[in-house]
Length: 203
Image (tube, rainbow, N blue to C red; front, top):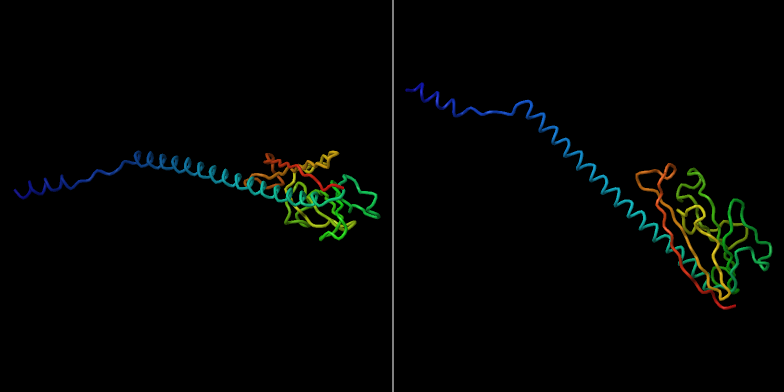
């Protein structure tokens, strides 16, 4: 009698475990799920970073255009070459001139404003600014002035169009690389062009 009870208890207490094949299949499925989920998360994060990078670029380009536009609204003369009245004015070596703005004498900040572009220098000498080009605003002859905005595409600050009615069309094209690619190896940069029209002061 006791033996029969023990046998029934022994049979009921047995637990069937997973086989090695089942464990391997479970591990494989888990690995696939983690891989797919991880790849999707990385794609989402990269997309968010790219979107943020483009938003930041747009803000910087708009800020620079607003700054240049304010100079033009206060101008008495706008030229794409050094005006004859700017006696002795020279462009610093390595810089390309784009725009010269003459304001009324006594204007706070100076009556002569020049805009230059320059290629980004090696990181060792200009670690802060991003290339390919940087726009500078100068108020003193043969001086680079101050950097206004970086991350400008090569040729991204073209000579403005100036009409007889003193309407100026400004355009800036910025360039940034996806966060996953260092700028010096970027093969697929994002570009963004911002334009505006400004009426300069009547002469």
